[in-house]
Image 1: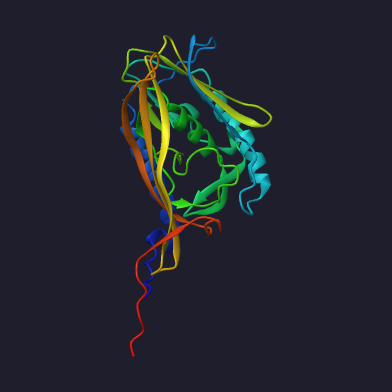
Image 2: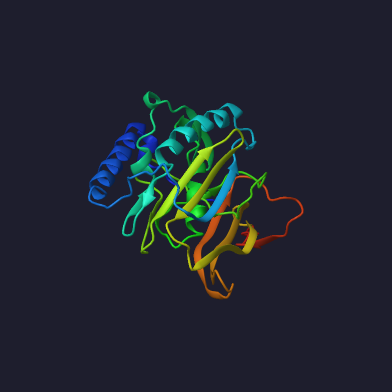
Length: 284
């Protein structure tokens, strides 16, 4: 038996969606006004590199118009210019939206791809989630404490060129779906990001050498089929191992997040799919 979910009021009256979004943005602006956020940028690099990562700029994602991918590169360059060199001092919080601001056409942002309810659509400033993904992944490899991170409830595309574990990214939406991390240490950290011809590159630097190293691990990855609704899902858990940098001795292993997302595509033919749920039998 299949039950249809009731449509949201904002779907019946689209103007209510805009009103709701602006209300959320106003409330977020008020709530974050007093937070001690990182603002100061340095052109000189801090001496010690903690971690580095890069991601490919142009990937073929299903039947998404490649024009949106190309436009994304412009959006990432504009955002990188606002973030590159920022220093997160002890007791400060990094906020992506506090640094980048609202992406608008007037500022030079173009239409890029955004995901809404698991569907690829276009919007001004689309594609900045790639910046959030990079920053989140790097933060997990430092002692910075992630205080706000959101993830997609849908897995929209197959693993074509995916380098990081499923569910290890971050989604953002100006300004109330933000990526934020707090510096609980006595060390100052610096974020470096830049866009090359092929990659979005980043690194986190510090003013002293760290005592610990961090390694992110995926566990219990599964593809699942809900036989009741005929819908595929994907799940896993993301862990972080912390070890002494000098000796390599592992100190602890901690759970970062557990993921369970509805898939918008069929699993690869060569993977095992676990079934759950039940199929209602027809009455005689």
